[in-house]
Image (cartoon, rainbow, N blue to C red):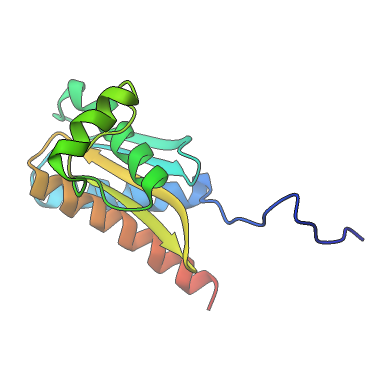
Length: 147
C-alpha cells in the first residue's frame, strides 16, 4: 500500500477520449454556424491531446488555436480577458506562448482545470461559441460518468 505524501499531487487530467468528445461537439457547432474552425484540446498541463481543422478553416489559425488552448489551461480562465496593456507584454515575454485572443476556454471538472479548448479562424464570437460547445459537451459527459 502506498501512503499519501506531500511530494506528489492527485490531479485529474483530460484524456484523449474526453478530448475527442470536445472535438466532435465543436466540429458540429462549427458546421452548424457555417464557420470553419481550427480546434485544439489540451490537458491541464497544456499538452495537445486532439486537433481538428474543419474544411475551409484558415491554415494560419492552426497555431493560434493551439496557443489559445495552452493559454487557457495555463491561466485557468478564458483567453481574451487579460487587459490589453498586459496582454502585449505577456505575449512578448512568453515568445507568443500566451495569447490574448478570444476563443480559449478552460475545461473545469470537480473544481479543477482538467484541460482547455482553443478555437480559431472565425470571428471572436464564432470562436467562443464553438469552444463553448466543445467544453460543454465534455463537461456534460464527465458529469454523467461521475454521477
